[in-house]
Length: 290
Image (cartoon, rainbow, N blue to C red; front, side):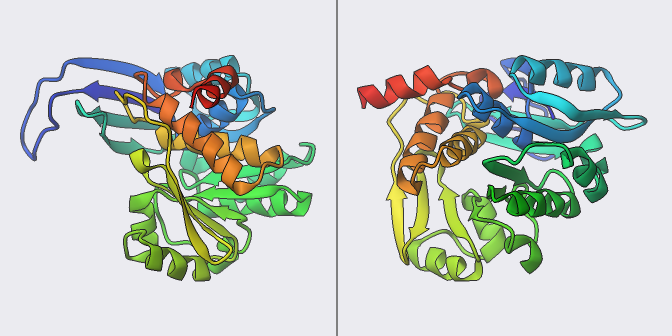
């Protein structure tokens, strides 16, 4: 996805025009962000998806190559636009996002099977819902067959079949996605109830409040480090990329969430999406100072 970030004192109401302070054209997409975060930490990442045969597609491929990703399975699709996200950012760092998936929607399950046929067995497979459920299922089936840890970030929120959930080791929604999926806010009782419906583990990201997980039949909350946030765009993706990296290294869940919390928190201290993601040294330095 190409991100069009617009910074304003307030967002417009219906039928209203508001003058903003600045605009930034950046690179996003939940999957691309999470892949880039993991690569920035030192993971070897193969990325599977599609872009449009347009200037945004060229920009996307160049940017992902700069992030160190294997792009041999990112192909351009004729007569399709590269996905775009318009992001309104308010002074407190909160945002509102409208996406048009474009070429992301053309990736089929057969494409995924073909693209992954010659990829060595991974430690972790992480998927989102900006591609079709069939493509997600094919990737998770491959990951499960390889013995990898499988992660699903159900974003944007959509109904999840039992077949799909059965392939997921860790389901990781944010607060609003949890409510869309389970019909209630992620308080302790609702977390326990939702966890009983999910075959794998459940972690919910809570923005400035960090994350909460259901562990051994109980609810465990993990506070993030305190930072001066100026832009929360992409913070959830930084968390997920950090969590995938840490779990792939064999870290236990509490340590992995603490590491991911530092990744997400540090990303809010700079403007932009992937531009704001910390590298491994920055994350380790923050841990040493806390």
